Image 1: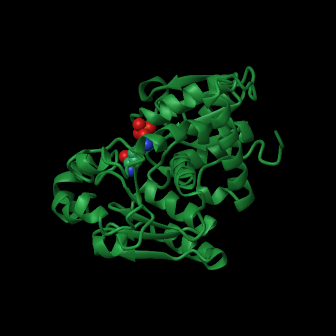
Image 2: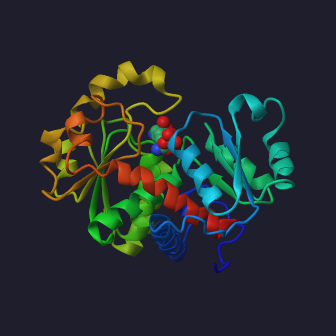
Length: 311
Ligand code: CP
Ligand code: NVA
């Protein structure tokens, strides 16, 4: 494995150059091929340990990092919220310094993005953002890898993200802009993606030919889309806002009528967990255009690649 990314952090998609994104994708595709041909053990990271810090629940992130590092010859330690109590039992800086003496990588799922930034600031080992309030970079890498596998290309495709302008949407904007994918966010007014991320994505897009737009009409947003994406209406930590959000987001539900406004051969993605009957109907998520479980599987392959190149 070439070393040009070794030791880097992955806090934001914006930490990655195009060359680095392409490297992650090519390693992911190679590792996936090996996994599927039963060459599961590819000991790229023998004896390496990944500390996994979680302030929030997780299925995919936890399992894919845990299985992924094991398949690469290392192992993980799961640190649940009550174990280390980030910033309460001791400071984030001291946790980062301590872990750096014992493990070779840290993956963290946190509320405030500043927490992963602080972990990275004080750790001597790579820190990987496993979701913060601002970004979900590993998810976006798995998502665009999935779209690439189904469409055989990325530049020039149109991705319609429908719903809340949340962490997932922010990372998809940055990654789409870098890869020349056109991305339209269809969201209720007041639920646009982060203003800084949007501005940065538009700046990147100027250099790659990607078109980034915001729409408040979901049908306009999905028009001509090659891929339609959604996420929950209220992210972890915002659950108390769900009732207030529900009527605003209802017109943005991914149902058969809305999907029929996209291209006939469009694919449907959702980062999961899905709130079936809210942001997406059973008919669509279980329907022929849905690739959500390919997408979930690709978390494993994309993150194995991330760990292999960073750790
Ligand atoms: N998509 C995703 O990150 O899933 P988990 O919350 O289950 O990790
Ligand atoms: N936007 C969602 C993603 C879950 C994987 C959340 O933050 O809860």
